[in-house]
Image 1 (spheres, rainbow, N blue to C red):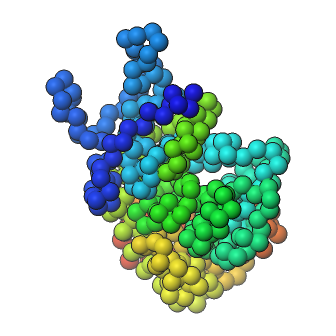
Image 2: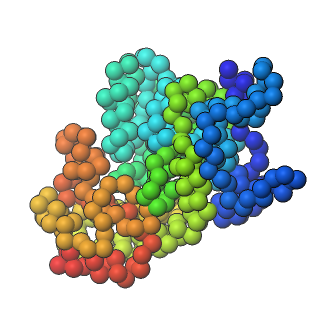
Image 3: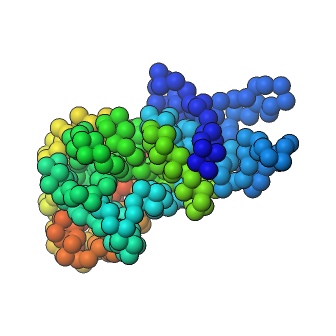
Length: 399
């Protein structure tokens, strides 16, 4: 079956010689000017669930929507091009992508070494779903690659990191950890959601799999749910696509179309997100009611040099601690007028939240505090609005 699926993703992405912004617009969506073709400039939303064939025993290029769809295929080619990957797979959500990856690569008795500061949903998946099937996870401070190596066991099959992490913006040295995993024959998974391929490409740094929540920066407009996996290994791609087809966790055509549209402006959006976030981080760092600011773009960040060495920017997410109690933090958040109090990130609008009661509420309080997620830690997804307006809103709420 895997061999049957192999041909489903065409090698039609623009050359790597093109700049990122060019690939974001054109990859996977080359205009077809052959006789009889529509010449459409934008990939259509192909809603058909099944495809006709001329011969009983030989399907044409498309067969059934769960196996492949022209709109999703265009998106997968584009995503692969942007991550400098050979293959891309688009899923119905980021968690569906993670679940499919774990189902494909792990079995009962296997062990994962993961960053201790992870998205709460990923930890929940490890601890409350895959643990039931005999998969074990250990958590370490992966800012120190030696701690990752020390945590490895004979049963370890995978190392899973975010860089930057959610919500404390810690970094892992991807090259150093890749050297460890390659020596041991382990799979290195990097969640690249926070920076997007515009700012960081983990496969180029030695990772084996890149994970994205497409819902965030790739879609970019808070109106699409999706996930993605990017790989270079053909055998791994075939296994992942077989499991994706078997479980049905595919991104629908309309969501694929929305993501394709969002990706065309990814370069422009990420530039503005980063500029605004840096200005806000510098403002907060000097505010008397703020005790700590977490943002790799600040010279005060302990891994600022590493951030510059493995990424071309710092992204649009930052976190900070307000002085006082959880009630003070809640009061501040509820006074904001321009920032929207909501979970998620990566949209054009600025979002703000309290991880301890929102995105990381599923993580035990003792565990949260152990890694530094306090009751007064606030996470901000800085949008592309006028930065002076955003700072003024923060100022009146902090006053």
